[in-house]
Image (cartoon, rainbow, N blue to C red; front, side, top):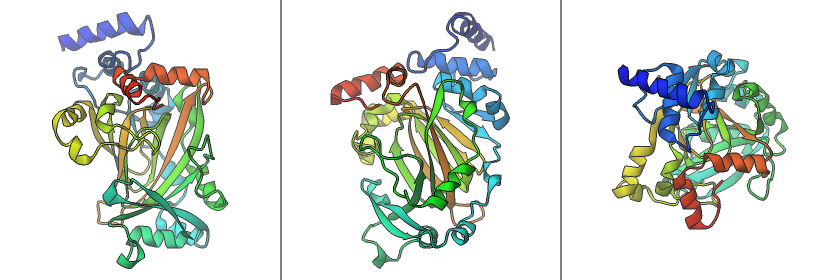
Length: 338
């Protein structure tokens, strides 16, 4: 207790009064202390754990503090799922004949290649929930999901796979997360909805602030700090997915690095959300229903940035948040990751 009181005094006298906050990229241990000091939790010496706040706290400015600290936080007790029925049977009935381009990859290959397949929304739900027959797909472990997004082609980086699915895109109006809780100066870049049953999404990073809102089902989120970049070696031209193999990451210094920089995992139920700071490595895994259900999941991502995308303010913010390990990796590959 005395040690915690001493650290609280250090936080308040040296950093909170003089600078307001400090980025995790600059002094990671002290930024963690700032979070624990602010929340009065006697766990200041425990690194790498999610913060956890209520939706009410988030709406009253608490989430803004996590954004300033570049520190991940789980938000419990939202009401997004109450805005409409996200069950796959209800959605299939509503959008049955809507044509979509579903995204398919081989889960056995960690999603190294993604292809699109045209079908009706009802067919997508059928494949997603009940799986593929062996003769329907050449993939060892076909994984299918649907992506709806407000993002369009930006510098040949990403494109909406369903630009004509106007009725489905309307679902993005029901995400139910207020932009204002992120704090002043942040703007929404775009929003996504992903839906499907039993799919996992490989480890990757986002170069934007990311709020993942769970709308239906349950999803596990695993998280690692940006300092673990050497263990992942993100592929710059392939969604920042890992350039190392699972076998390589299970042994030696890569395993030690991932163990040190792991934030563990959190499970989101319908209505929960998690703030994932930019450049944090993360993966998502759909959980089966606790009562033996079909593992259907719907989640939304809201991405935010500061300043102008590609402009000085945004680039300065990204650079300030990069840890030394991140900068060293960029120097080695000769290109900026974010």
